[in-house]
Amino acid sequence: MSEPRRRLEIFTGAGRRRSWSAEDKARIVAESRAAGASVCAVARRHGLTPQQLFTWRREARQRGTNNIGGAPAFVPVVLEPAATTTTPERPRRARSTMAATPAVEIEVAGLLVRVRPGMDVETITAVLQAVKTLP
Image (cartoon, rainbow, N blue to C red; front, side, top):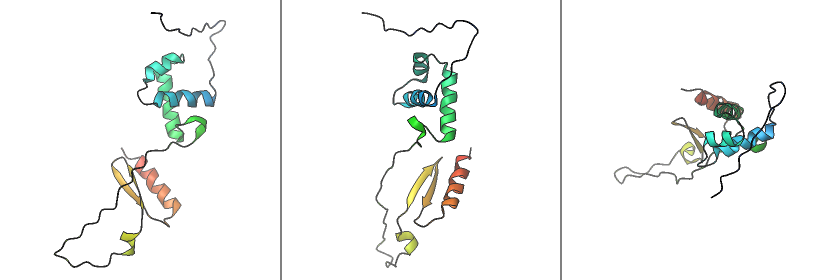
């Protein structure tokens, strides 16, 4: 059984730092985020220290760009039917328009943020920023 090939870099002259393009960093960060990927293995494969790769991952998360090309990162969407509960003991009343209006619910850090159509973008942004800063 042959041993896997390993890349070897030889630095000559004064110790010069390598520079990585934004595309290379994004590609390596995306590779490290793949299901089942080990940050240490990905870092070793590209001649990095795990600490450097963790720094790149943190910077990408702070910029909100976890994907190649600087595109925003998306999270999975789960669609659930609206819960309707009626009890036979109580007569049914007309539901308010607020309850009947569809909404987008965003769960962040254990909190649920409900966004209804027509809500002010600045308010939504402020609420999500506040939730992100919670410990």
